[in-house]
Amino acid sequence: VIPDHETQDWNSEKPEEYAGIFHFRFWRYGEWLDVVIDDQLPTRNGQLLFIHSKERNEFWSALLEKAYTKLFGNYEVLDGGELAEALEDFTGGVSDTMNLQKMEVAEKMEERTALFERMKKEMDRNSLMAASIPATSSEEMEATLDSGLVKGHAYGVTCVKNIHLEGSGLFGIFGREKMPMVRLRNPWGQCEWKGAFSDGSPEWQKIDKNDRSKIGLTFEDDGEFWMTFEDFSKHFVNVAICRVVNTSIFSLRKTWSEGIGNGEWKKPGSCGGCINNKESFLQNPQYAFDVSEDEDEVMVQLMQKTSRTKLGDDNETIGCTVIKVEENRRYRIHNLFYQEVLNSTVFRNSRSIFFRDTLKKGRYVIIPCTFKPDIEGSFLLRVYTSSDNSFKQLTHDQPMKSFWQCFSREPVLLTRVKVLKAVGLEKQDDVGADPYCVISCEREKVYTKVVKDTTDPDFNSSAIFYRRNPDKSPIKVQVSLSR
Image (cartoon, rainbow, N blue to C red; front, side, top):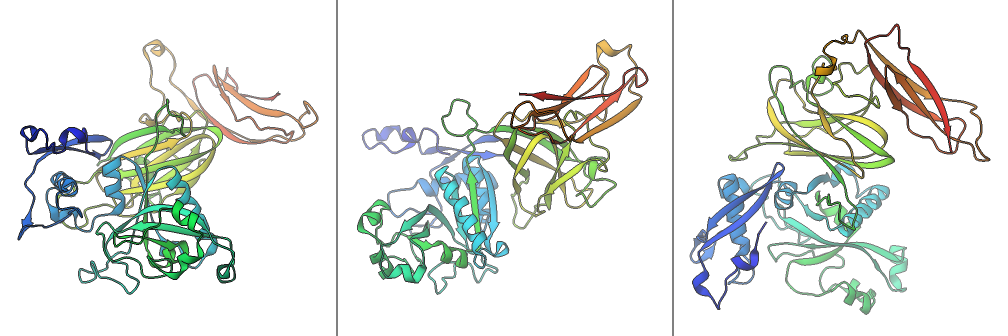
């Protein structure tokens, strides 16, 4: 965001080098944009009108806000923006926004535990997180609640961890040795949480001094405070998690394979609406990707490209559908009857939609779409898997003739083969076998996944063939027992 920050900073030893211009970078739809501004900031009565730092001689936050404003057009557009959007624009990461009320995390212990573990894991991965209580009207904006929390403020989540309690009365009160807790920071530096474990509250006396030192506990009016995760779930409504995805092949940390597609919903013929529109849904752009591991976590983000240079909600309602397809599919889907529709995301009128799931080995097609048909727009689709995913857009409806095939026949028959399972195969050792299938036709071979340690494998794999000589080249299915 701030390239070469040391050279841009004020140097008291070389004041003549100060030029009054500053350089920032923001991520927009797959690329980093450079923004240059001067040092003139809006003030009233000698006070900065908008963002300001605690220190009177520190201006980086106000300058950053001005550059971000230049990207969108004016300060007014930034008012009340989405948490996830700002995190993405500053990092290029992939954001997911969750509504805690709809998830019922305050009422359901299982949901609350799962969310805590996820946030803890994301914190360990250096993801950025923020939480907020939305204001439903202009009168509610920046209203301070009895709890000390402020509506409309974005609170940064700075720590998520289990804190050990001493073996005194708290065991009887809380019934467990470890307390799931979060640390938050109000960037305005005022109006802190007033409940349990707030600054200076008696609950902190039940925490060992060494543990208090380890978490850097201080009681200052700096906007930073701790909450139990149960209280956090009750009082906050929205949580945004922005994961800065590591795609470097040289990193020691977990890396991801990234697939990026820029596309359009355009009339006529490529803006078919959601899957409810049976006649037009498959007209939408289609993208294929592979899961090469036996099982893999897959992250998908669909982002519509909006100008956001005016007030009001100009986002369309968008989402996407994931379909399990044939192992060798290279052309567009034209019929869903034989396909396995796995999941459709929620449809929202937000800038981006995030989807995360664990998928089994195989090929998949993802179809980004607007909820209603005939809505035009541009989008960015990002897909992340642990291994190479061979991400690509499916643009052709059927095989295209190459120069070497100019004298060959056109395909005359399309055949789809699905191998479900095998029963009673021969054992290769005491455990069983590692069977797989080979489906072949007209010089093309398709391999199913290998099913480990069994003689009764469930393959559930399919292949598709565009056949030029169906009378002379039969389809063969061979079961192999590897070990």
